[in-house]
Image (cartoon, rainbow, N blue to C red; front, side):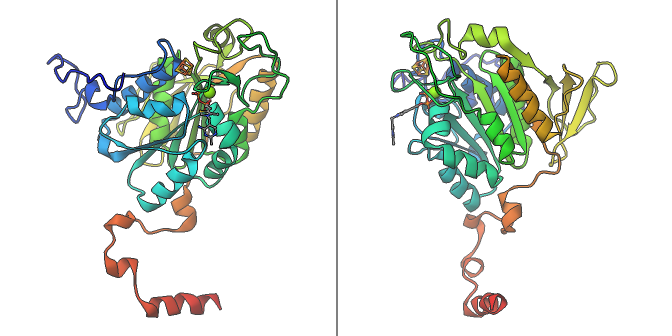
Length: 351
Ligand SMILES: Cc1ncc(C[n+]2csc(CCOP(=O)(O)OP(=O)(O)O)c2C)c(N)n1
Ligand code: SF4
Ligand SMILES: [Mg+2]
């Protein structure tokens, strides 16, 4: 309950990260979601990722839309910046904030209703523009907050709790993200923290639009037989193509696996990710092969998870627009308003 205050006291032996912070420093209010909701497990992974990366909470801006999923930023990173926007409008609010202050880490949290229905256009355009962000969709195939109607990500043929069959085709947000140019694309499962936490850490380190689709079962409305977003279904059909074992570090990464089974992916800031390949044929730098593989497996009912695509030389919207390096709030009046001579020069260049 948000009105129940967490006790300030904690065990003195709680592990601390490089900043001297414990997990408690990355938590938020007590969750009001249903007990067992997949979304709470995703919040736990976000907390773990930020703790392990020793991120200063005030360097994070968390933004969301409307839905049970979009409520979750209240339950993690209580000392970070937060903005709960209108349904489906998180991407444009995030884009504006990012353009104003490029120094923060932007974490967009959304639902399948929020991003694949009312906010579908917003989702596609923020990704297409390469906004530097981690965009997480907590995907349960239903509108949980409004009592379980099918969302646009519900698979055709899946059955509602009351026995209705969904006859509409599904939107796969991973396929769309790949198609519109996301430079980091992953899928995971809320029930697999060991897979999800490193993916979030790698996405935070990535420069550009990083998208993670997390299948996150709704225990109240979509966790029955016949649903393809239930815990049982995802566990039975989860096809992981790789795992990030060792996450980031500026020191050389040492791993114990056989040669050929590990790939080291360099990130823009000099950190690296060690990737353990499960499917040795899967090439995570081939956007078109990824699209085709994921869709072929989906046609067989399989849910492909892992880091599905990453562009190593990625850029972001600031790079495309050639904006100033400093956040706007760090510029002085003279820099923000250089005067009529400067305007004259720009106008002359456009004639
Ligand atoms: C403009 C507008 N239209 C409709 C709604 C009603 N509404 C609230 S949440 C929601 C869907 C939420 O689904 P999803 O994003 O999948 O989140 P979940 O609750 O499943 O996590 C809808 C339709 C609204 N709040 N605002
Ligand atoms: S209704 Fe579904 S999505 Fe919402 S909190 Fe409950 S289990 Fe989670
Ligand atoms: Mg939903």
